[in-house]
Every structure is written in structure tokens, then in C-alpha cells.
Length: 170
Image (tube, rainbow, N blue to C red; front, top):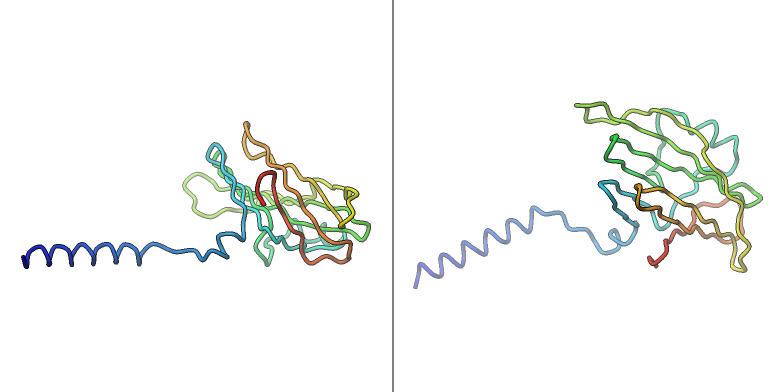
């Protein structure tokens, strides 16, 4: 009988130790991002995405710099070639969304990514909707999948953030 009790206690200790070593994400943190994966690539999008820039001059001056102070609102992690592509947002006073792209690459055998280039890649005029500004941004995730992001904000300037959703993801 004592052997059974000892075995059960040992089993509970092992299960508890494994549970403590695995990171647990709070539900709020888990819901703070949208993650889409395809062919080894991953798109990570903040649901409440910060808008770091409010003028073309600001984004043009900072996009090619060595680092950006905050977490990027949209990040695409490519498996091959190994790259991280950060998309930064600018909304002008007229409601045009300007998308800046910072491409980081990793050489074979390296663990760190280095900045390859930073540039303004696209701009989107706002679609006419009664509740404010709406932009549709397509991000090619893989050869098979293109993700359409819906960015929304009230008509106000400068913007601090936009709300991001995708088709089928509330």
C-alpha cells in the first residue's frame, strides 16, 4: 500500500514540476496578438497596433535607422531565407496609411538578425466608412496564403493606435 501511495506522490511531483517549467500566457496577452502561420512562416500582428508616425518626414527619417524603440505592430517571420520583416505605421492628417518596412536578415550560423534595409513600401487611402477610417492591407505570408488585415480608427489626428482584425478573426 505504501508503494502505491509513494508512486502516486512521485507522479504528482513530476507533473507539478513540469507544469511549473512551462510558461503560461495570461488570456489577455494571448488575445493581444493575431498569429497566422503557413509554410514555416508566421505573421504576428498586434490587435491594438501603435501608430508611431504622423508625417511622411518622420517615417522617412526613422525607417532606415539602426533600431526602433517599440515592438513593431506587424512582424512577418520568414523561414527561408531567414528574415524578420517589421512593418511600421504612419497615418497622415488626410487619413492616408503609410507602411514602412524594415527587413532584418540572418546569415547562416548567426543567431542575431541584422538590418538589411528600411524603406517606405506602400500607402493606402482610407476607405469611406461611417465609423471612421478603414484600411485594407494585404500581407503575403507564403505562396499559398495572403492575409488581409483590416485596420480601423476614428477620424482623429494624430493617431496613437489602430484596431486590427482579419477576415474570420474578430
